[in-house]
Image (cartoon, rainbow, N blue to C red; front, top):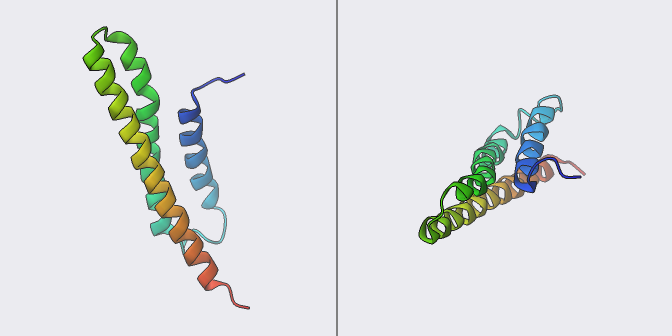
Length: 98
C-alpha cells in the first residue's frame, strides 16, 4: 500500500540518505556532491504537491501548464541527482588506493 506519491517517497529517501551520510566517514570529502543531491529534494517535493494543485483548477489551460511545470521540476531534480551521483562516484573512486 502506497502512503504517499512516489515522488515524495523519493525526496524523503534522498533526505534520509543525506542525513545518514553524516555518520559515515565520507561526509567531509563529498559535501559539495551532496549539495547537488540535497538541492534536488525541494524540486521533487514541489513536483509531488503540484498534482494536488491541479485538482483545484478546472480550466484545461491551467491543468496543462501545471503538468508541464511538474515535468520540468522532475527533470531538473533528476539532472541534479545524476550530477551529484556521478561526481560523488568520481570523488570516492579517485581516493581509493590499490
